[in-house]
Image (cartoon, rainbow, N blue to C red):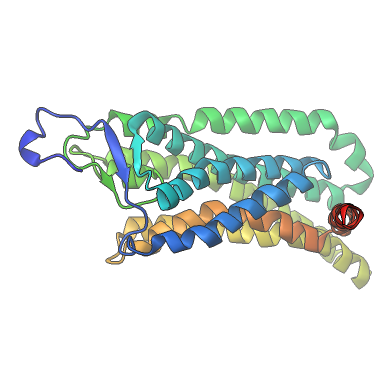
Length: 310
């Protein structure tokens, strides 16, 4: 349990205790079933989607990474009461969550650029969007986010954790962990805000620019059918972008507002990290003909194998 304030000058917290969802500790284990199902569907669907498209393949790897960063620990808390997490483990989780969220944002930007070239410069598309460009974009995203978010866990580790060590959360969020610090945590909040604006903010700005140019190009088309076809190729991408960035804003605002009911921001934070990984392949599968047929082939093969065994 948390250490007493009288000992705070002598003792340093050596581990954190993740209590789970605030206010519902007695029955929170029931949430493990829907969360486990979301996790399994995220892993399964993203594994199927990987070989089908380059950028969707990258997005699916990032989604699997994001879901796996948080879900095994959450399920361990619910099923085995494994609430203790060491400080290095906790700071590593903060780093991984920020890194994967940044990479998801970067992948959406790459996909927006891909759609812009496909619609606005279709004849030049094969010469611009080459395997070499996709590889360079992937390496840039990994390096950008891998290095860019280092200050967040480093600054969190610099804080002095001398008394409380119980986190009202299922995962190590930067603001949740640093709220336990005995010294000033404002540098951490400011750093996270600046990095979010520089990283995700610039991604979103460029995505909006890409889609403004796409819309302008589509409106110039004489045929309504051609315009509809061009926009339908972007619809799944737009649905996911809208969901992802709206969730980022909502989670940030609810955390900063420090509401009387802390369950809401904690639940939103967990869902924001697990719903997109399970939602992304589903939306693309529903909206993209090639993916639909790909999924149908996989399920048909599995059904055929079952009937043979029977």
